Length: 257
Image (cartoon, rainbow, N blue to C red; front, side, top):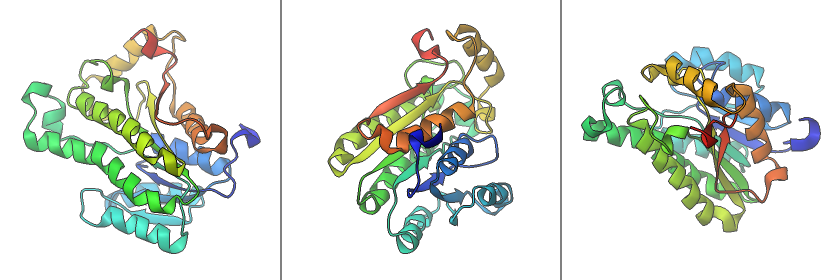
């Protein structure tokens, strides 16, 4: 991409790196390659050992714990960014969670507690990040989250995450409308099925991937590198008039799925 989507001088927060096969890591790698300075979070001490070497490779300025389920941790991330950087140009929210028993059952059978937890971690945490980022984006900025085709259409075995991701995509549109006057742009990246650690929790996911690849117009699937390249373009000034979009990175699967 070269200088086409240069991010020199920009500062970004990446939330959701679990390992080197994470969508968040692929995006962070592209952000860094285009010159951005990065802050990266890790979930807990167990996750730290996996994420810390990746953060070093990315030459991250800030490496901060963040479990959005723990009171105060998300706020502490933004407080540190405010104290050390004083500003923020973009962020990537790439986290989702649902209790296994709720994720693997029918939507109609999901528990109230499981649904609420899935919505809190996977959707409302993005809204919270937007609220905390707003005062730091003094010259505008870009907020990215990660969705999936199952938000729009029924995807077998995606179950509870379908309604949750649909709420996330609706939130993208409302946040884009509300934050647009401040020059803050908002998008959801919606790749097709990808082999990630998060996807491994979805029942019969390999079968879903094979079916998607067979049906996609390009007869292949996108990979995390494609998502990273798209994310870097979206947070760059080249995309300054784009906002409120669900960006499908799926080799065309969404037009036939």
